[in-house]
Length: 270
Image 1: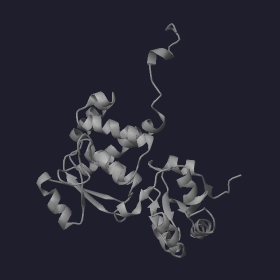
Image 2 (image 1 turned 90 degrees about the vertical axis):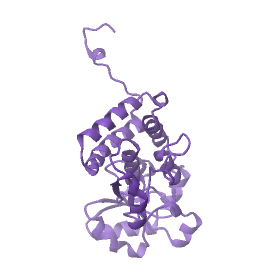
Image 3 (image 1 turned 60 degrees about the horizontal axis):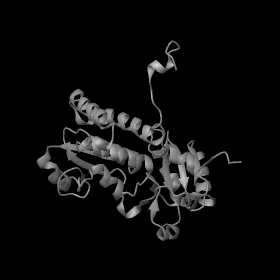
Image 4 (image 1 turned 60 degrees about the vertical axis):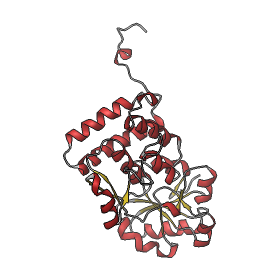
């Protein structure tokens, strides 16, 4: 029987990528982390004996603590946070069980600092909304996004220590048949079936290859409509987050569902 404050790998994976995802804190010992320097998506590293210092920043959030095996460090750190009134749980089996279940782990060396700044071209349509969604939901929930004139992206990146994306000549952009969303998936090793399905849809809509996904025309229509409905790019991003939250849930567990109003009518022959 699972412990009261324990969460399983399956339960946590279903929360990651959604608006209800918890704050994840990795308290693995430094020596253990050096043996496999990867983290669960959105996790921040913190020494176990500094965990109480995070309390003020975690207030009002659900928290999951990760250690190597889900024993003393994560259970103790979660218990300390609960004394501060937080809803804190620990991951059953720790990072070892997560890894054994072949769930996504991000190379720590590829991660930007928490609360990083990203910059791209203004007036976004598809990739420049999908990529921020991906970063906030799977990499850095506190990431900030700047939308500027195309000719200023490189200089803004340099002067404001921002990460440029979806422009020519940078790593996180279009390469061959892939789009920027694909590049970010590869950079952070986010190789899961739902995200790959969503990547195909984004690529199809963003590169005008609607043969790749029958839903591409719909995503293009919604994206153009959002850009027309919002003058402010950040307002458009917030509206787009809801769209991609819905698309992710469809890609994860809703692809088999169809809808036909007539099929529910009793007067229509079966």
